[in-house]
Amino acid sequence: MNTNRLSKTIAAALNVQMTKEAHASQIYLSYAAWAGRQGFGGIANFLFRHAQEERNHMMKILEYILKRGAEVKVIAIPAPLENPASINNCFEKIFGHEVDNTKAVYKLVKLSQEEEDWATWNFMQWFVKEQVEEETLAMNLLDKMKIAGGEKMSSNALYSFDRDMEKTSDEVRPAQDVTTVNP
Ligand code: OFO
Image (cartoon, rainbow, N blue to C red; front, side):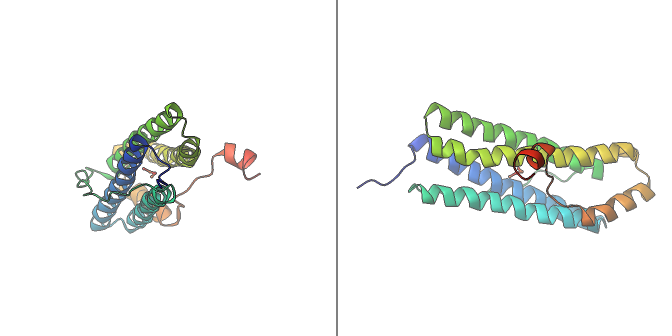
């Protein structure tokens, strides 16, 4: 008896997204190592924690594929992108990456809608919400840096930014969640 509850197309798309999350984790990991090497321990700490978060996203998809009775395909993860040119550039790249991942998540939502796979559509809503959080987080950090001078941030400003990042949570709760989900 066939107990697979995912279509071939959806299973393939979920496997691609699973690898994309693993790739995101590697990117954060490589940026964290780069920041650490430059002496920015706070930023490195933040990025290491975020690398772990992306890995958790990968696991979330892996577990969902298994739960729906389909096959998980663990394949090679593409190498991370080249190192950033500066701390400002690091967060610009991160923002760009998050927007790119949001587009991939939307594609999966669209596909599940077209196939009327409401379980997958519902599962993917978690990622839609998560991407809003991650884009907001990156945007807020870029705004902070812009106020502090952007590419022209002084050593003092960079020092304080790095120190703040040590304690910065890697999650933000958008107001819409505070009011509708967790009042
Ligand atoms: Fe997996 O959330 Fe960022 O990319």
